[in-house]
Length: 127
Image (cartoon, rainbow, N blue to C red; front, side, top):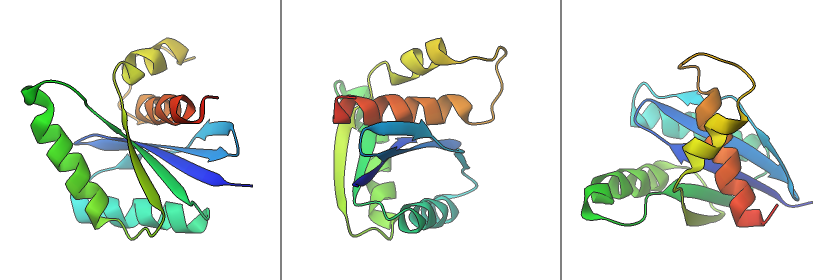
């Protein structure tokens, strides 16, 4: 069984999803206090679950997104991860995730971020 992970990297929270073959499940988001702390926590999740492939959402398109692309690729360089890292278009993943939510309100608990990570990972896996 191949285990993959998906990330939706934000400035305050990082959404996390894990896939066991093609079964994708959102995990608890990592609350980002600083990039080093967040990189350590994500690295631990990847190692604990034996992840071999990491799919990271990245904005594609205009120059206004270049700064976020730079931040995301830099964050990934901080991870203690030896597997394959794949960058994938994250367009509309948060919109799709918001439509999936089974709860109401505008909670900032990271559930939406992890659902977006799940959407990104499902797109990659074709699941």
